[in-house]
Length: 431
Image 1 (tube, rainbow, N blue to C red):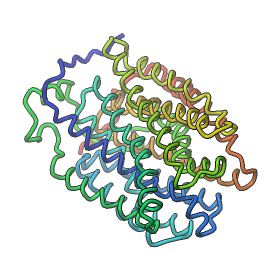
Image 2: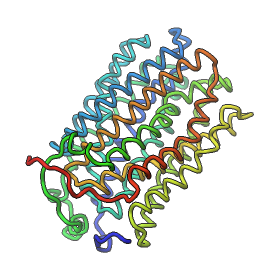
Image 3: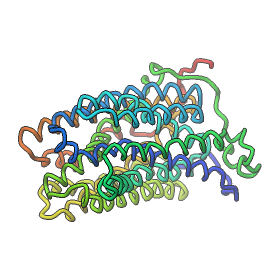
Image 4: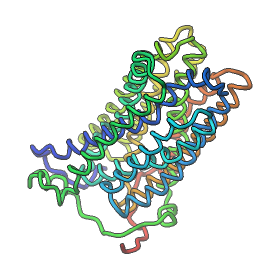
């Protein structure tokens, strides 16, 4: 069965891809800002006597607040749209990013990162809402894959940039937060000047506008949490996020510590391994989005295309279970890099679920619920890993769990949403 919606041949206009580029840069900045602390972790541990449990509290409570922020921004984006939503989001997280220069303890960082977590929670609700406005279904997964790849670019840039600022220029660690935070101000100005809805954008050609608006218009309204939670498709999306997000979060926050403790690498030399891992992840994000979009263009129905892409991604994650015992750092890099690529390809297709199955007025709410579920899983993982490392000093159980997480997530998603049928009976309240 193929999708009934007919999308005309792509036009010559490129405004929608400029929007995609801005979304990509926003994701890059969000990951730089959240990862600076992880890169500095080994140095701050030595300077201030941090424990793994203490650092687990910092990352765990970040994810709790991040999850709550996802619920808020999911609700907000449905009401104010991505233009205002993204401005509020990045402004808030920039305040939290700068606030980290004022503290030194794990408790202090946990508190300072509250506005960072709240603001960054608006990244994906805003980006996905913008993609839904600007891209028809058959281009949407590719667009999501491109800006989702910004997470990996941010992860690549951060260790190199922080190493240059702190180890290369011999500046105090606080300058890593100051310099990276200044980039946000430039993006905020660019977003405010350029972003509009397609119907209101002065630079959009009639041809490109017709292409974007070719899909049938939807009823205008609002859907609250109670209405969205009544559907199995919602629980499938939330379950998938709950199971896979903890893997990605833990890689982001703990890999510098793993390389330091397992292989003796520090701020001066663990940049190349991290860069290699996130280059592989970047490839996974784009290939995962391209593959399902390719299947859709060949006439494969949406659910089969998304799940087939997720299945192949899940297979690539399995070998990471051996990473903790890798004989050298580059073998560990290969295994972890494959898992990160798998995650990004898998999540690109999972992130397409709101746009595939729900009307636009409900997508922000669903994205918020999914983000909350993912953050809840991340909190459990962070607290558990911190306690595990202080008790036994081994990352082994974590990597084993990572190896099976994606196959389990796909199984659960399929059982909850086997037919991948769009929601057509969503209760709606007028705006």
